[in-house]
Image (cartoon, rainbow, N blue to C red; front, side, top):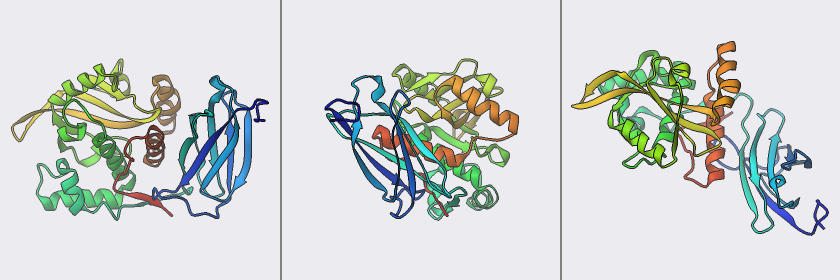
Amino acid sequence: MGLNGGTDTSTLNLQIYDGTRNLLPDGHDILIRIFDGNQKQVFVGDKTSSSIAFTSLPFYDNSADNFAVIISSSGYRQAGFTPVSLSPRLPARLDLMLLPQDPHFNFSSAAWVAIKSLLPFLANGLTDTAAEERYTDLMEERPPSLAALLNITTAMSQIFLPVGTPLDYLKQVLWDDSVAQDRFFAYADSKLIDQVRLAAAQGLFAPEVGPGFFHPGASASWKQVQFGEANVQLTFHEDQKAVIDGVACVLVEPDIDYYKDLLAHALLEVLPNKLTGGLTNPVEVYVLRWIAGRHAGVPEFNPPYILDT
């Protein structure tokens, strides 16, 4: 008999990873809590394995089958995900990432020699030496900003427009202070705007009403709607133009928000940041985007850095 008093139960296979995107080594004492869609706690307990099968979770055959899973461990940041839809017909899988409270940015895979071919727009308009100096300064002096840049460009490379990806249209970054820990500014081929409009018509993006409220000076903005969290937003400043390598360009401001819902974004992200002077944390974006991608079954979010101790 199932936990709900019926004969049907459901199975959840939970796997826990660390900031290197590998399974967390066994032996950590991890508190796991599972809630059904009615916010009733159906499991609470400690586990020491990174791969756990819960084989007797209740099945209700209604909205209560949208579960939430939260994990925590001493010295680590709490992680979780919802909704996880359970059914007796097929085991569900959930991959979560558990990070130390103070993770370290490991950029060993992001040396300039690799990045300049991966992201050529970073070097455009500069000598290779000057571009490498800017990049090295960013890595050494503002690692969260470099992490944000790598988060956003990796996510952009995984968005498929009618022609190419948004990353393909970037021509030249604005260095100096425009590369921040929550966004960057770059000139992009103006054709990107039409490509995003076409993608929006296909349901990949949603337009933001009044983009200048969140992005001063913006003329148009679209947010990816593929995931529940950590979607790419492309904001355009069409009054700032340039011709780069013979291509007509406009200024674009890519970023990644925690929340897809505009009200949640305003109340839970923008307003707290304004009150505290904080910015979107690239560590949180890294975790949210990775978990969302794993749950959606798309290619793994794999920026060229890891988080370790």
